[in-house]
Amino acid sequence: MNFIKIINFHKQWMNCAINQAKIALLKNEIPIGAIIIKNNKIISKGNNQTLITNNPIGHAEIIAIQKASIIQKNYKIPNAYMYITKEPCLMCLGAIINFKIKHIIFGSYNINNEFNKNNILHTYLLKKNITYTGGIYKNICDSLLKYFIKKNII
Image (cartoon, rainbow, N blue to C red; front, side, top):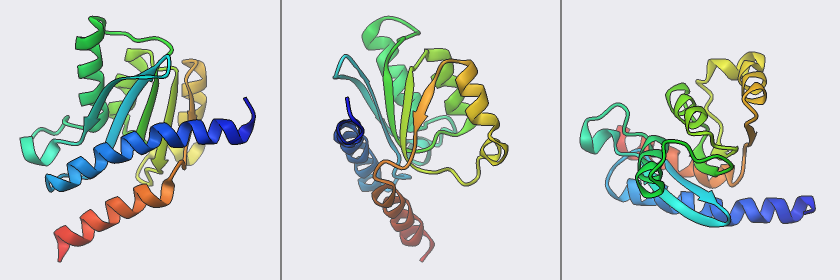
């Protein structure tokens, strides 16, 4: 697959994650969405639910992983892809690693992620045989987050 086809493939699935983020936004929740795909099929979807459930681990990635493990009747789904509108936090990254996700694709970069500053995250993921691609539909993902912040500060 050439580079353009790969990017278009990722954009197609990232649109589904963006739709999950929009669902969260409609609930006045932090607009982050995630989907898990395997064999070109969506296994599960999740959107942030931390505010509406008062649950600090109600992140989109955790919800998508929990749903996928129930649907697949397994706590590991090797060779799956996860599309997330924002780069995962360390808690979610731990769950992704334990779930054996093969490739992480995200939109917005997590500027608060201390591991990124010295490439520690990149090195660690490579050791775990996990690849990642960032910045897919970054502007759209960023704008959803900025809209939420502006709406809730003013």
